Image 1 (cartoon, rainbow, N blue to C red):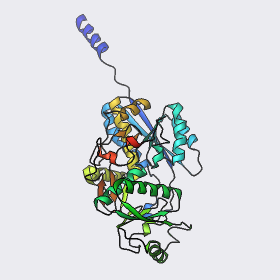
Image 2: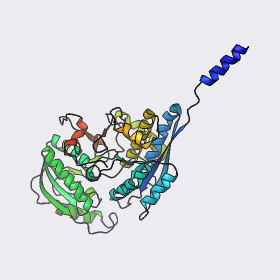
Image 3: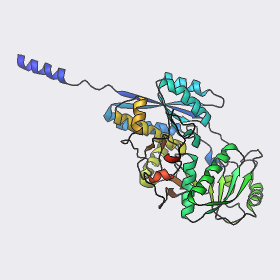
Image 4: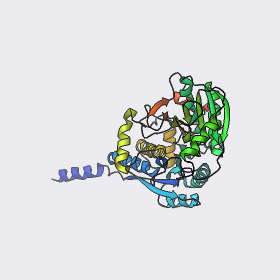
Length: 392
């Protein structure tokens, strides 16, 4: 009897204690996006971006049941004029040291500076500015959203593959329209296309839906595009959503439209269904009663990246997870045909670019024949030899 009691005591002492649950809190810091869109179909939903993060957290928690981890998305929505630092501090107080950031470039940089002393990690899901991965890169900001150069290169590869090498470029009059136009110029030079002429559409203000009726638009677009040199494709650089949507079927010449209208490059599209994407689309629709947009998908992917790293590294420490994501062992499935990895020199997520006409995914870049010595995905955007990033 004594020997039996002794044996039981030994087993109790030797048995490992149940592992403590690892909690991972992720803040969703998001701006209110403008409702001034050309189409009412593009008006942002109230849960824009947040919905993707919530679905990602739910997916992480499915795995977390077996790894003793929990994941939580904490919303922080900024109205116009709100202080991003104050909102970030509020998330820190709630224990969120991973931040899914749907912010303008200026706010993203301000958030990065505030996050440094906390050791927090930001995941950019919307800002496409190349400078955020180049001269203004930060060591505590991982970029899930593609850059303008990646989007432009994805489009350019397809147009060149189609032998539509001569482009008529029409850009808007706002600063970010010029940034997109420059990305398209660089892509044309990179892949052997030629911009035969550039034109500017001046934004004179007014309601974009109520004041730009079909009669007015039908008169404006032919005038904007007539008497151009011979070209194969009409390229719109209209990030401000002022005129691009009116170019298809409205231009003087019967030519395909691409860029900010017509054939559009994006990281995600509601029509994407290849490589198992349909099951993700269906789960999103069933949960949120709307389609998954590009920001939703980037937020879902950011949350899944945190979940994958936390599971593999068995930690919720931001620096440990950042280092793991940058390592050779990290990759993430994203329903895009290949597993995605990070570019260690700029913290940019490598990813295919979808080309959509708003109804169907027409193609996916990189295109066949565009090769790279490391990864074909590195044919999209700024490659390591050209980078200006010095992480700090």
